[in-house]
Image (cartoon, rainbow, N blue to C red; front, side):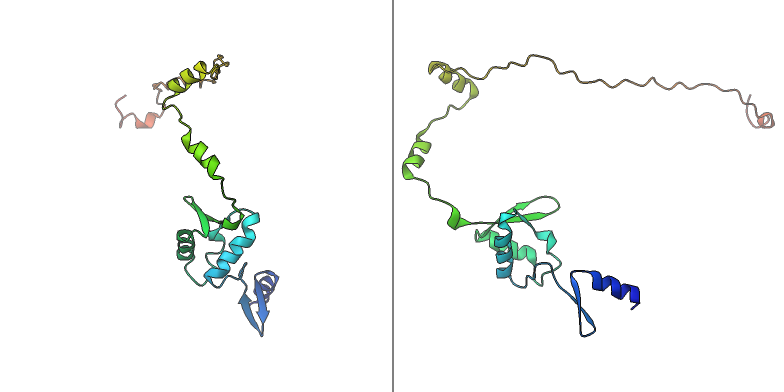
Length: 166
């Protein structure tokens, strides 16, 4: 190894040298699925935990571990086209809802259509929201380009007169 490469490796915060050998230190030191849940629990105050941040650092299949944790309701999972973000499910912090509130919530009938809702509000003496913004929005229109015309040009190359019909 070159001296420059060794110096560059020594400056990295994820690589350390022990007994003339380089050791890679993962960012979170996750070795088991339980440690993954501990890290997600610790980072829950900061928000979600991107699975792609540690996908190369763990020794097990991270997607399988996340799916198992999701199936057992230990984490919430949001998947986008590029990445998967997991959140710790803090069940003990959730408070139970009063039964009387649930009964009242479920007993409320909401009209099926907007017109029925508007009529019911008028019967009760309330007015529905009316549009106050009648102004047209002015969207700038793009100017159309004039079509390009094919112009005949005079050929001044006299040495091509024999080849072309001029």
